[in-house]
Amino acid sequence: MKSLKTPLLIISCLVLLIGLIWIGQGTGYFPYPRESFMISRMPWAWRGAGLAIAAFIGIRISRKL
Image (tube, rainbow, N blue to C red; front, side, top):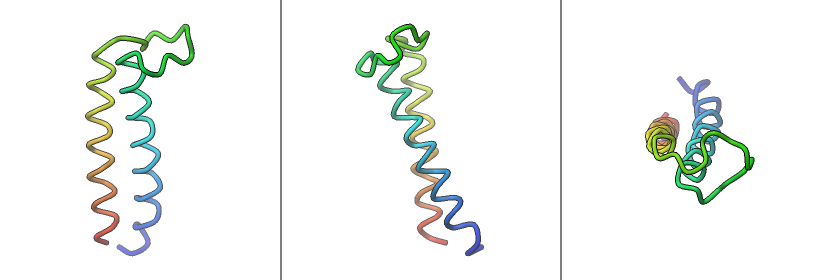
């Protein structure tokens, strides 16, 4: 299980970053790229929140390995 610690931590951090970007785009705080279909669309903010929670759980699991 020790061999999974680093890859799980890296993947979880990347997923957390993606989730935070989705939250920012869905709420309109991060309107980049300007022509994105995700800007100011709350379903994307909720999906990003779910992704961020899943990533946080992955980070916690990787820290306990």
